[in-house]
Amino acid sequence: MSKLRVCMIGCLGKMGQVVSRGLLASGDYELAAGVDTARIGDDLGSVLNLSHIDIPISSNLQTILSDAKIDIAIDFTTPSSVTSNVATCLQENVPVLVGTTGITQEDVEKLAHLSKKMATPVLIVPNFAIGALLMMEFAKKAAKYMPHAEIIELHHPQKLDKPSGTALRTRDGMIESLRQSEKAREQGIDDEDPDKMIPIHSVRLPGFTAHQEVIFGDVGQCLTIRHDSFQRESFLPGIFLGLKQLQGQKGLKVGLEL
Image (tube, rainbow, N blue to C red; front, top):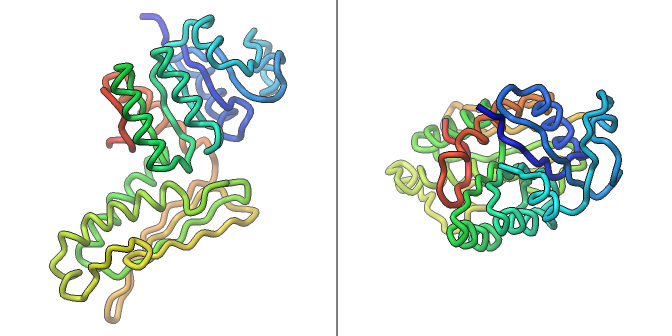
């Protein structure tokens, strides 16, 4: 069985480089193209301090998708470019796995419409770390019993979106539980404003990679659920899981399924 040919969009970014190396070491996928806005024409392998792999970096996504016969694309770029990138992939009927965060709900809805129209799937994942996915599930369950909670997310200074996509998705799950919680209703936690129900605090400092804690408080006790990613390689298992789920998916979905 031939390997699926993957285009890495944002191949020179911090995550793009990690994913590119992971794809090169993969037995199921072939890194077939790299797209970025710098080092155009340079060999991607050489830029990654690997051997020459005969993949010149390109800035023309549409041309690459057709000429390189791409089966699937991965986007780790910026909030300002990801929507256009995904739309280009969908126009070429190339499924897309999106790791870029900061996408607006309005853009998600537009891409969902285009994904359905082109019959081509899109999977948007705020956090690929398996531990982070478990953290979100644990927090959702805990919110039912301990409705007073706040979220603290800590990242490196280069992270553009604030709050993080992980924090927002964590809160969405917790609010879903709160709206079904009798204890939350008894304690008057039924505000329509998510920021009042579960505040999110964002920290951007050198030394951090990706970290989040959810703190629950109750009479005489507290519960803290925390996840830490110390290296970006921690996201690779989730990325390969996302690629697998994307192949059998229809339409646009947000989040991985464990």
